[in-house]
Length: 409
Image 1: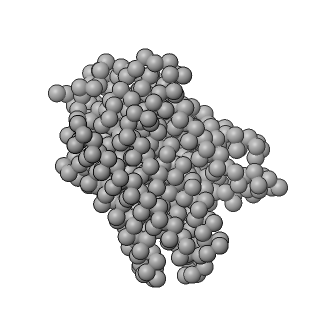
Image 2: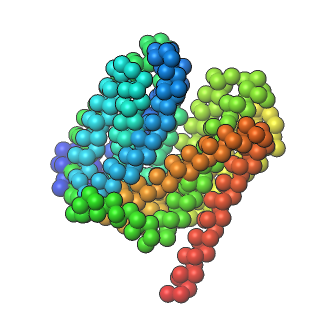
Image 3: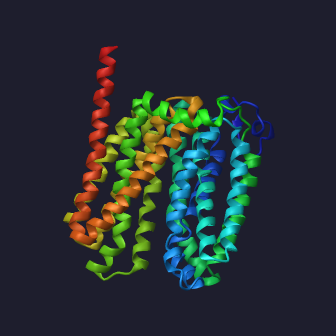
């Protein structure tokens, strides 16, 4: 069986990649591409003050830039990611990289706050290419290696989320905020060219029309209980994850007199979770993804106990590592679950899972802001623990339902 690699031109242009076994080199390329793509939706967050200074009197509008980007990303998940089951994947991914470059150019030259918000939404929509790459990697992987492959690609995704902010802040301080988006444009074109060369050519999984694809999302939700359980678990756990990162800077300032620079360092500490993603994937291959999901839920619940009980900076460090380990383990394993359901619908399954995940994250962030404003850190910890406990409850209920179905049949 041939390996898919950058240097293997025949493999790179195979008409049907379903029989190929993905090489480590291509897995790493796809992981890096995922991280570089998703980073684009986080570039604007550390640069908001500089962006607002460029458009005086429009602070309320420029404050909507991160929201517009996130909403655009969610829209891309629902409207573009399902196309990966209908359109040849390599061509779709390369086209989306080109669209991302155009969107970044629009942000870089935006003459007004309104144009900036609109272009930022377009950046979010096109950056959803990261979620085209992930199911493609799962499709290329052999079933016995699917968890490990997803784990590596998810590590790249997490690196993009964690380090995108740090890169943007450093570039903006030295060269201005527009320079970061020009750099992002160059990176988007680079990954587009690399993926055009490296990715194999595939056959579409379905011949459904675009409207039928979107309608099938509801059918998949109704017909696949494992998809529903995975999505609800991921929504709860990503909500718990978002509770921390929404409130941590406020907690550090109010209770430890530490500034935004230290809050940024906690993001680097959270990158330890990157190391756990491949381990979680390999464990899911050996023991099954549901085993890892259960451990991940308990680990995240434990992290909130540590947040509340260990009132020192070192306690925060330990708890952040626990939280990120749990979040990564659950996400890799839930991806493993859904990518094993219907090979012909992997992009649509991913669109549903990730949309639910981001909805949970948005609700977790909103709840954290309310909890911090009205009741402080203890309420934040209670909310984070409650969401982790809810995820564990859905997991347990799902396993019981699966066992009952086996007994009935």
